[in-house]
Length: 390
Image 1 (tube, helix red, strand yellow):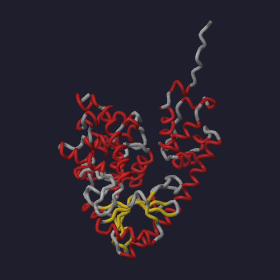
Image 2 (cartoon, rainbow, N blue to C red):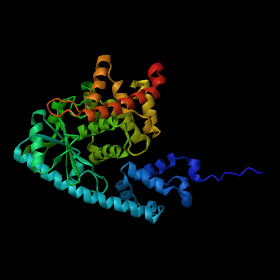
Image 3 (cartoon, rainbow, N blue to C red):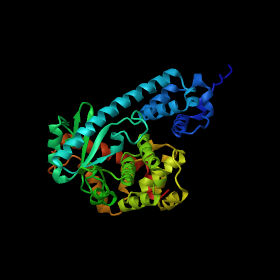
């Protein structure tokens, strides 16, 4: 009996990475041809592509680009564009709701004269992207002084925000979340990253920009700090969401010719976050989403990276982000063994009783097991690199 020949489609030949190739081609905002598999429309996995776009939270980005370039939109099925249009419209409605919440919170802080620092405020004010439907917002992040933490909780409660039962620093109302961070160098992110790779809180307040002349206590992050914070946030979450890469890209594009690359490097070195900055810039440049000056990438050259960092960067550039562990990168960024132990302990103490957060033993144990098993799995997968440097 003759062996049945397998029919190979263009998608099978290209591999699953072809979907991301198409996605990046869309996001480049360039009138360049799409990959050749586009002509096999009946065989193309449109639903899988749509799932990837939603998973990466890029529905608004893709729809906006299709509307800007009709020659691109013509290659997509009508139902596909209709799905993205609905996502875009939901983004517009959500942005309007967030803007109302943002203005209400700002007004309350002005009235109470409590110092506050907003993160990603441009997105909340609809000034970062050309349309509010592009970036789907998820929460409002604020940084406050440790001594003001209780007052801020009372302020949000007075605005009818309800505290989360299991996460006391999170407040919710009408589908909008407010995430409170406080300004100690090791606590400015809830995840307690070690001091030597954290943000210097005093300096970040000094560089912050006042939101309104009549409200000196209400500020937003300086654009260079916003970018560095974004890169650190990406590594914290193992570079898992493309939408955060797009935020960094847009912050740089918005500044245009006035953007100072050397100043960005200085801020990264000051915060000891040059490695995540290099990862993000290298990825944006490799995917042709943003042109990075050669001298900047050369200054941040990967020759300074450890074997683990080089392996992680290589996986990032090949869009194998699922194999990267941000916690493992942070762990081996710390030189002293004792400080590494303290870092692991902080992972277990996310819900510790420090006068601000109540003890929640069950939640803390769950976080401990999840994070430690995740970290142990990453160390097992990278054992050869950690042991032999290759």
